[in-house]
Image 1: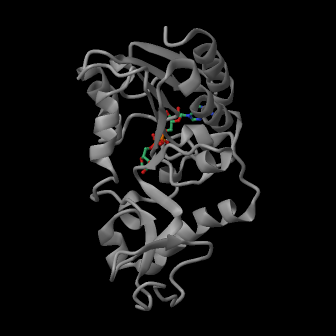
Image 2 (image 1 turned 90 degrees about the horizontal axis):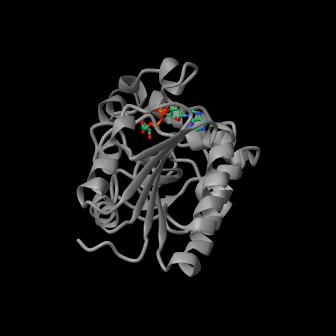
Length: 245
Ligand code: APR
């Protein structure tokens, strides 16, 4: 498909939120070193022990509601790029995040797809309605849409479930001039395959900005390693000054 006017797609993972104080999954002290995916992040786990699963997400939601977790310089730089890039290059910037936190939107990003859902939203198991969630779940609350009691789950994509908005994401990847991957280990598909999809169309430049080489490092045309709050503001300055090089 012809490369259209310098669109940028940015994939982010837990690493971009690390310097805001949120844990990643697969680092030494990561979430999956403390609890098993099979116990808290699958539909089977939820059927087997809903209390344990709700407790896992309630504990991760609370810090975000406390107001103590704020976007960092990397989130802020991406929000700036989204605002200034259209005038600079005529293209759009879209963030596809694997993260379920709200730090990108708090930083001001608007073209944003949460492919793994959002922890500050709940989904009704009876009618499917999605609503804001500013409290613990699993205490007998009822759905605001259908009234069913005790049917609300975190609006989060579990292992074995389909990530959200995949058709839209592949369309964006096929129509971008630059694909940037930030703060993700490249362990989980389909996100880990986005770089190959973007390159598959032949036109996109691809760059990995991460603390260390990811599983998919060899698929990228370019890579820079270091903390996101160092790399991202500098790279955004470069893009806004010199364009895609
Ligand atoms: N700056 C940049 N990158 C960092 C930083 C930092 N300060 N700290 C850690 N990283 C990098 C790590 O080196 C690692 O490559 O962020 C990456 C985090 O990888 P994971 O913990 O695997 O997180 P992520 O890739 O987002 O996981 C993908 O897996 O468990 C599921 O649904 C969950 O969305 C998640 C998905």
